[in-house]
Every structure is written in structure tokens, then in C-alpha cells.
Length: 189
Image (cartoon, rainbow, N blue to C red; front, top):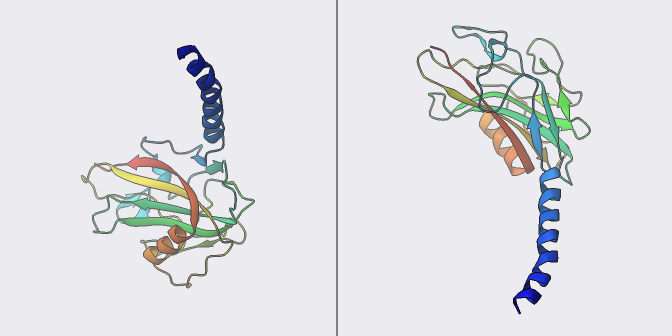
């Protein structure tokens, strides 16, 4: 009886391993040439203002394993550690066309139109449309910056021109099929 059970379970184990490998190979992932998971960002990604003097450069981002049904993408950068009671929106880009799977460093410029054609940058918590780098209060410790790409089920998020970060976040989350996050760190002593 034991040998019969092993013979029956062996093909099932092979099938399960095959599904597991396939699922892993197709998972939605986010990577960057400029920032790394769990590591401190450079001053390239530090804000220039509010007492900070960085280059305010949005990082290169690349995603793969796009889920079926994706019609567009959104990018969000959020600091949950900001001492505001509600975190800090550093960047939100919506309506990124579905054929875009990589953006270059600096695409979030507030001075030049470098974001993907057809996309729209939402006003960040610094009051600018585009990327606003890290600038935690001095001595506040390490802050976590969540760079997230959202695969959306719609090709155009209909949100007002003056939408708040919270409203944009709500609309993004309401239409997300799947997301991929890379969390980097920053600290000012």
C-alpha cells in the first residue's frame, strides 16, 4: 500500500513543483539600477529644499512579469515614516501606457516633461507635479521609501487635475490588479 501511495503522489509532486516554478517565473517584479531593496539611497534621490540639498532625481525603474489584463501602470513613492500622521507622497504617476515597462532616472522631473508620453504626474506632498526626493527630518532615524508599480485594470484613471495624494492613491488601489514594491531607505543625521 505504501509503494502504491508513493507512486501516485510522485507525479503530483512533480506537477506541484512545476506550477510553483512557473508561478515564480511569471511574478510581477520591480528592479532598479539606482536603488536597492533595504539599502540606503544616495543623495541623488534626496530632495533639494526643506533643508535638504540632494539632486532630487527619480530613480531608474524596471518591471517585469506583467499580469494578464493590465491596461496601464501607475507608480507611487510613499514614506510611511513621515511625522505627519498620514505619511508622505513623494511621487505618483498615473496612466502610464501598458507597453512601457521601464523608465529612466530623472523621468519624474518637475522641470522637464520626461515622464512617459500619455502619463500624468500628480502633485506630491511638496506641492509639485513630479518626483520629490527623500528629506526626513534630521535626527528622525531611518525612513522607508516604498517605490511601487501598480498594474491597473483601466487605461485611464479619471481623477481631477487637483487630486490629492490620498484620492490618487485610492483610485490607484481600487483599480490595481497586482503591484510590485521596492523599499529603499534614507536617513539624515
